[in-house]
Length: 432
Image 1 (tube, rainbow, N blue to C red):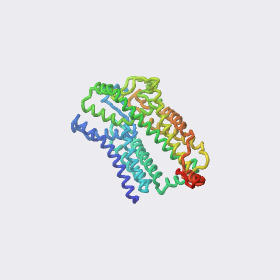
Image 2 (image 1 turned 60 degrees about the vertical axis):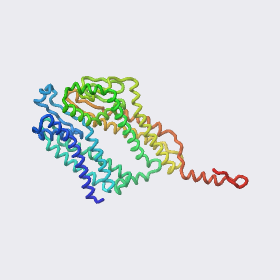
Image 3 (image 1 turned 45 degrees about the vertical axis):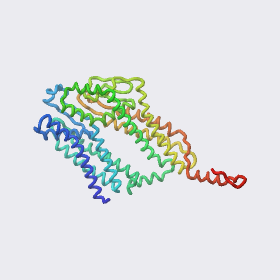
Image 4 (image 1 turned 30 degrees about the vertical axis):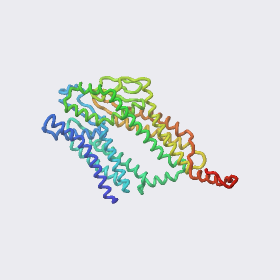
């Protein structure tokens, strides 16, 4: 594909990714505003609110200054100004997925760098326009963060998609040269990078799935508490709809907290609070309906949940062990090497812990004044526990001996041995 066409398609991808995210906020906001206030000063309020939600969803902290409205809302003066940095990660996840598809398409067209750079430039331009045109005294941001952070989210997705596609299919460029260098390594080491990435993906996808399942189970078991909190809010249809849409946008954030809970360290909703399998210690919580699913306590049995990361580490180790054994059976010589398997196990654990820490970091922040400035999981303990748990599981299977798979040479040797056997008396050989 011509490089100009690749650049145009990448620009369109970035434009669509930003537009869909903004429209996904603006459309329901418009309906809710008209239902509540009519069309009075709609655009002056809707566009800044839309921009701030979209920016917050792309990890941009928002500073709220309620001013005179604080007294009307029953908020004390000391809580009238605060930062909100807990991101509704649904927007960032959508941008990541869309950018990854764009990067993969650019790599498949033979121009991954052009595609990624063009998409990045367009998303940076759009982010700048959104930041400049949405200034207001109530919800403000730091301009450079409003440009850099959404752009960074897009770059991560596009680069990941491009590298994955180029590594798999080739790009006649940098990735192919790196691939050739790795292929030139000895059979003991050449598959190590691929197996580390594959094992890490297995662990992370497994943890996300387990956390999503945990969230679904808690909603099913404690749905009554969620409904009670909706009723205590005393909101009308517009309020119920707003709360529901907001909580849907925060579902990936809740799943990220679930990963921290499964790993063991848990998370906090306010300073000096803790929600973990070993116990729950909470103060007064905001009246967010989804907080009704939080377990009221812990038990020794709940600690068994930390075996889930161990199990996913074992699954990753089993997948890597079989792949390594097959590679060695066809290209290796003699007994399998022990050191590469140790490196693969450690690599899977380190990368899994690093990604778990990243997930914890982007899902933590502030959601209000004073004690609510500390919400989410601490990346350090999450990284340490996930890394150790995954290492235990991966090492058990990666370092265990495995039967060498049969190769064509083995089969040829067997056939040759059969041919060398003397025929039985009578000149007729029995069928094998």
